[in-house]
Image (tube, rainbow, N blue to C red; front, side, top):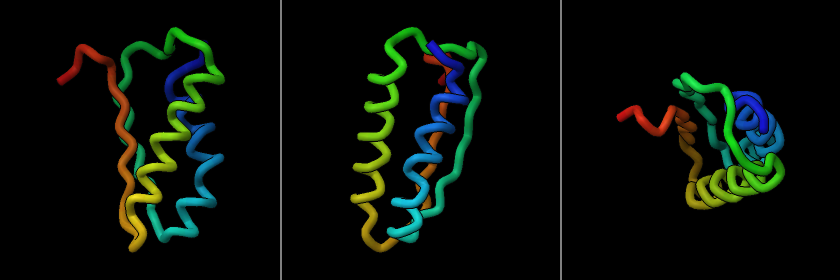
Length: 75
């Protein structure tokens, strides 16, 4: 278990060089009330890595990748 913001920031730091290679700017927009995610930290990181990697590869001409995070009860 780790704070949402910390976990996502770690993954984004890891993926930053790949985003730069694709000319992609990463924007973060976090709105968490609860600061923890319940689950295996390494598996959660892998899920986030896969989503971000897929998003980067889907934008071969570059662009902006917006990472939003909020509690599930927010709309």
